[in-house]
Amino acid sequence: MRIIPVIDIMGGVVVHAKGGQRDHYQAIKSHLCETSNPIDITLALKTKFGFRELYIADLDSIMRRGDNTSILRRIYELSRMKIMVDSGVNDVQKVRDLLQAGVEKVVVGTETLTNLRVLKSILEFAGEKRVIVSIDLEKGRVLSKNKEIARMSPKILAKRLELVGVMELIILDLFRVGSESGADIELARGLVGSISIPIIMGGGVRDIVDIISLRNLGISGVLVSTALHTLKIRKEDLSRL
Image 1 (tube, helix red, strand yellow):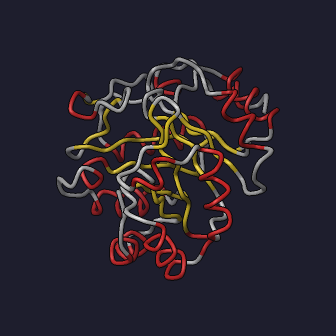
Image 2 (image 1 turned 90 degrees about the horizontal axis):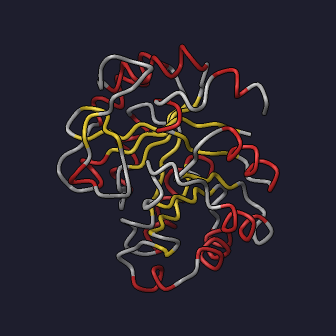
């Protein structure tokens, strides 16, 4: 079971993401680190938990308000962690820039994906192993500017993406993010049996019990943020996995 810490970067600092209401996000206050500096937070996560992977959401880029590519490059250089980044990519050039910055895997989120043809071109350019697709949800419904994608259920879309050649999926409910309301166990249960590719779940994870429940269903990884910064998940908890 992969436990993947998350940092959300906006305005050059790590913010506390909650409920997908990005205009209201504030700089994070963490028990792990005295600052909200992305590099400090990254190194604290690596040092205190031993994490080797990191998920980064570049919210400025997702919202088309600039980007934090220089920070991403610095994070990689100083941490040497395996970094996956969602920066709202929608073309091959942005994928190229991220890979050149040291990003291990590019996350293509349905929230900003215009159509599946773009996804196919990204897969062809980067290779299937360097791309993860995130099925972005809001209260369980697929979030996408593309009407065809938005009409699909998470399960149908997951099957479609597997057929396109996607080798790994993230299921992320933005409404649950930062809420500590619990992982969507029922959704996870329905997805695991419908596709054969690995699934990473994100949004609402409260504690190690949630993570164990997801693992027991066959989920391969989980994205976690708030529970790490509030110390509701500690390093010793991870030894139970």
